[in-house]
Image (tube, rainbow, N blue to C red; front, side, top):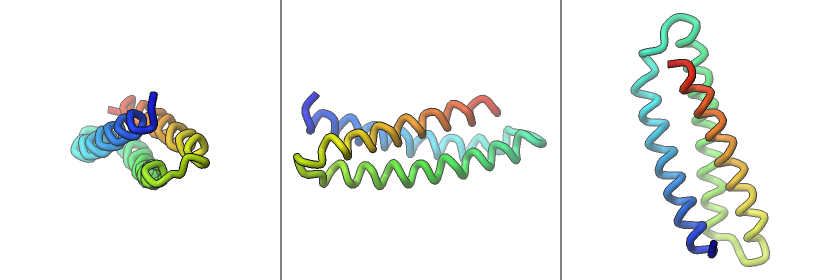
Length: 93
């Protein structure tokens, strides 16, 4: 995969993540009792991961050839972390 293809894939991933966060916000009232508190906690954690992912994406778009692999790895790691958090919160609804 070329740098440009990876950047486009990363952009699509970021856009998808932002949409999923919005969807989770709308669904948070479906969780009840203790699950609601846990859902809210996990949602806040996801929002933090979203910020980290956005920052990694910004670095990715500006990365020099020398830093490309390092920045690419950081973005991929942040993306995987977000997906893991997303699967945990989905289990609460």
